[in-house]
Each structure stands twice: as structure tokens, then as C-alpha cells.
Image (cartoon, rainbow over all chains, first blue to last red; front, side):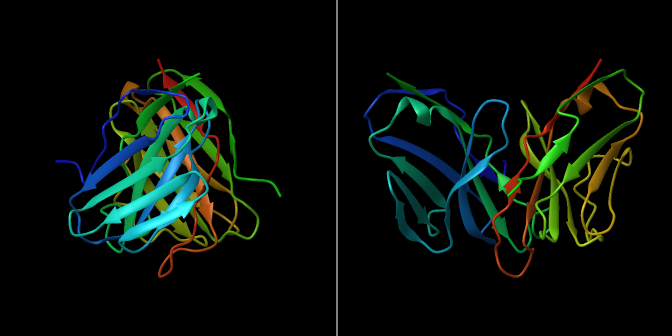
Length: 115
Length: 116
């Protein structure tokens, strides 16, 4: 079992819909939780970062962390065609296998917003 | 200001050749990271530098991989005797610092390596 599981999709929704993206994880040492967006042939860019359980909102984006269930989510409201990209969850703990400061990523969900 | 830059953007090489990938971090960022992104494995962490030193090299896939950073700035990732399974996008990221606090990692555009 991978440390971080994420459905690769593709996930296709109509413009204006609410999008829900999710990851589960198994390593309870993870303390920081991030969502990155990656456009084709570009590097990932940070969208949201959370530390504690609960919700964090930034514009149309809401990140949710449930440490008891080891489950994180990203919600996108009023989705736009420009939101079409691959969304990667990432996690960081003091011990993450290859190094204490390397992020552990999910495989990414390919999201398509249909105009 | 300028972001993280990587060169070359694309590299095609023959199996068995050595390749060198370069990363220029954001000015003032003391931490630098290398990742590899492939279709099968997703985005994997390879190695982290704080200043010029890498405290843990266990994330490198094999002893054909090595990385160095000089002057606390530019880093190179070298792959010796390349194999077809090394084909991937190699991403570099930098941040203000590593532990104990989380600092945002800013990613470069990557180097797309194809081994024929």
C-alpha cells in the first residue's frame, strides 16, 4: 500500500460545478498537508496548505483535513475551464522515508472542466 | 523575482550515457529539493539539500544517481549509465529552509529526460 492514495481520474465535470478531490494516507507522522495544481508541462504550484484538522478556505478553494480518518479533501466551487489541470495532494512529516523534508505526493487527479 | 529555473528543458540520450541536470533555485533559498515524476510512480522525492549538504541520500533510486550543490546555490543531478527506466521529468524545488518549520517549496518547470 502506498503511503498516499489518490484517484488518478480523469474527473470530468461541467463548468460551475463543485469539485471534490480526495486523498487518503497511512502514515500518522504526516503533519502538513498541501494541494498543488499542475498544468501540462509545468511544475506544480501550491494552492493550499494546512496544518491542523478542519477546514481552510481561500477564495473558491476549501481544503479539509481529518487526521482521525487520515483523509484530506480539496473543494473547488464555481469551477472554471481554467481549473482544468492535475491536482496533487502532498504531505510532510518529520519522517517521510527519503528525507525529513521531502514531500510525499499522491499520484494526482486529472480534472477536466467542460465549458 | 525569478523563479526556479532548470536546464535543459528536454534531454534525449542513449542508454548507457551519462547526463547532468541543472537547477538554479530562487535567490536566498537555502533548501533545495530534487523530485522525479513518472507515469507509473507519480512524483517521488529524491534528495534534499540544506545549504551545500545533503543529510540523507537514501531517496536516490540507485548508485548511478548523484547530486551536488555548490556555493549554496546551483545544484546538479547526475545520472550515470542511463537506463530506459530513468526516463521521467526531473523537478527541482527550493524553499527558504527545511525543518523544523514548514516552508513552501517552489517548483521549477522540470527537465524531461528520455532515454532511448
